[in-house]
Length: 297
Image 1 (cartoon, rainbow, N blue to C red):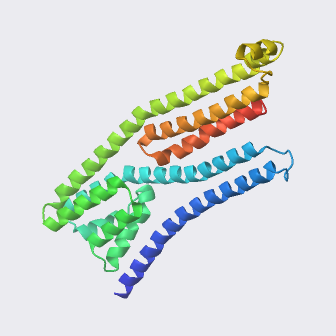
Image 2: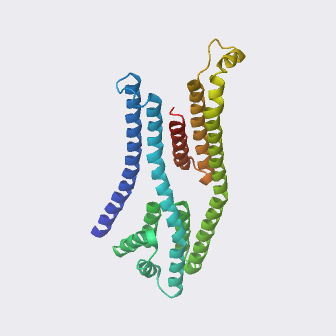
Image 3: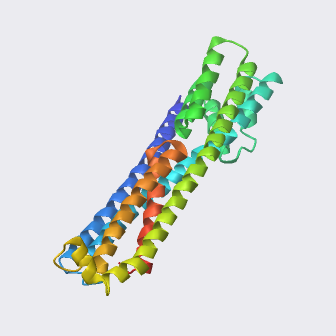
């Protein structure tokens, strides 16, 4: 009982560590946003001089928040994808061990000595929990909570129900492994199909940037130069419109376009708005750098 209590305590610590990691990332993102917004305010009242403008600080605040959180979500989703990809092999090996005459407990112990990539430490934890007196069901439930992927939770739930009902566990494991593999193949196919739409969004954004660059470097200066008087009279304005004013309009329009394109790209990728954060960061960063380098806005 002492060992079981110690294991449950360590499991809770592991869970708290994951939660603490996410809270730390969110706190870091918020901290960077607050820092750059403070710098924007100081720049606005003239404390920081003319190093960069308040608008740039606000954009840096946006980029720092989306960049940190977006990278965290990307690495987390990539980790879960790798777990889902290797998990069917583990279930298949359990099935083969059961058919060879091993009990479910011995099959897990045997699998814990194998190589399943990033899934290996988690399988070893299952084996350790069982060795210290935990039931197979409790160990598998804890495992599904730790990895926290939809596919693994579904498969573990199926395996537990089969073992409780007293059916042929080996056959159920075969079906579970095949089902998990089919789900993974469908997910890979969906990602491959939707990736073309994501590429189209990026290409469309680059085309939009190219058109804006041509307008801002060739067409707009010509209209606001010698033909400025004609432009003013044509628009009914009392004074001429400067190149910088028009560039700023295009600047903000491009940033808004980049924000919308990033959100759509993330939804197309896997249907989650959290996946949009990294695309928003990349596209807005490209737009910001393009205007800073080409036009010095």
